[in-house]
Length: 444
Image 1: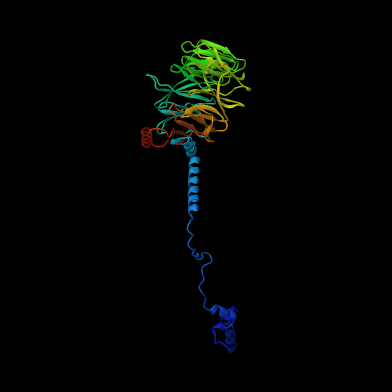
Image 2 (image 1 turned 180 degrees about the vertical axis):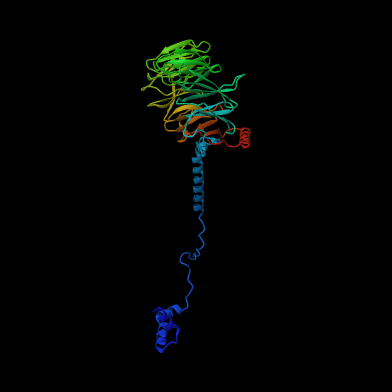
């Protein structure tokens, strides 16, 4: 059948066939197919319309756009740094350098300490990092092979014969070569520390949960002796001249002699003491749970004055500059005259709403740090007025140097150094040259 149809098409055309073909040729469909087709733009890629020239940007709009761009750039920098440049500038500081995260993976920063030319950071995995103070370069990283014990402190204590750093944890001490970071010695404590150690001559002195002050010879690793106070010693031992000052949760306040670790004087309060003692060359200041701030004569322990409050005191007093400062619940940050004349109840200079404990004085302000809210506050030393304040959620530790430099650290071990804008041009130039000469610190 197919073959017959094919032959019919190929043979001579009949009149009917020609009429049929003519009808098809002039049908509307054929006419439409034969008509010329106007070119059309592709549907997927239309030719873009030419926009009219944009109207010139008004000066106010241009200024607002530039302000928005600056705010976005500043926000990005603030997110990058532990202590952002916005807050640093507000406090009169500039950022010198910041390291990469230095804490071991899955560990957190526990200890931050400073020496003349270095910063020392320790983490919860037992790693210790030495960092150059001038440019933030990592000198070395060492592992103390820490187990479950918590790191308590790092002390750099060079002697004519030894250049060592001493890492104190809850069970003992690890001696590191300060040049290489190599482990030189491990020693166990006969009494386990509850506080960060204080350096007293050739000894590390610390309090214990069993109510002792323990004296440990750090060069030889020798447990020298202990003195009983009672309760628990929860506040770090304070060194004042040739005395070590300690207090216990049983209310005992004790001054111990440097040469013998013997008792120079002792006082008993009506309630315990939780906080470290503040001191100067004339007196020591004790905040007790008996709702009183006490001032004792440093040599004999005689009561100089007593400031009574409405609540137990657990915050540490701070003897900074020519002032004495204490955060008192219900009263705020209170400034006292350390040695008032003929005022047995003490003398208050001012009270402020600033949170936290005073760490240092920078120019005409005292710097108060509230770790619970991560808030740093600058308070006018003369009036108690809050000059500036910033929340620093990434900051875990803050330290101030004698030259007002500041070092902060985050939980992941980023260490950042800041210096005041008031530094001399020569100092700033020297710091810039040192920073340019060394690369940034390596990551964890």
